[in-house]
Image 1 (cartoon, rainbow, N blue to C red):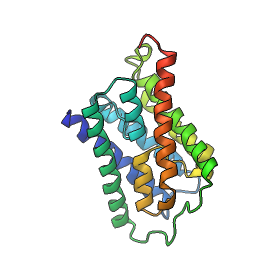
Image 2: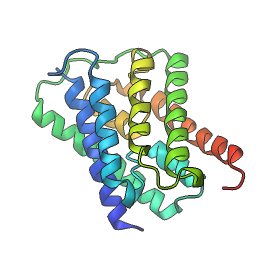
Image 3: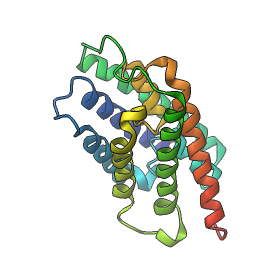
Image 4: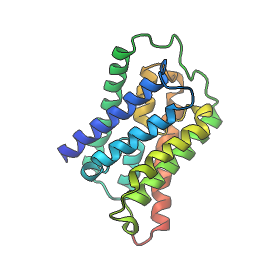
Length: 212
């Protein structure tokens, strides 16, 4: 198990979930600008740690990379633990920094089918982009992968944020539920759709890249 990579995954996921909470709960930024901050911190952390861990910061991405056979099972388990723990720690930090949490979840009601579709589609898009820009032989050595991945989250948040809240990341979904951004009753929608989206992206990647 790669300890250095696990530490990097913890740090990157921590700042991602921390940013989600800070810009979503009584935000200081104007309405509509939160996705820019979230997509930007993801890109920044990918550039910071991508050369060490791959810069997943997302259990669905780790699942996709594992199924794409670029990550061993032991490392994948280490990544998943680090990412989920980071999401929980980030939620605790947000609750310390912003003690007045919402009285009720900000995204209290998510229609099941639209929520599943929205989270599946853009988690698929996110993992598909990660696999193509950060793991494919044809894009080795590129310098744009961080922004490509960050902008995928930004676009997804603008496109379907009003439908599902725009998580596309199980660690974010867990952290957001702790912070009362999402309702705990909807957590299964996020986890099911996001993990299925990550798995589907991996198999589509393998189909479109038979040499890999």
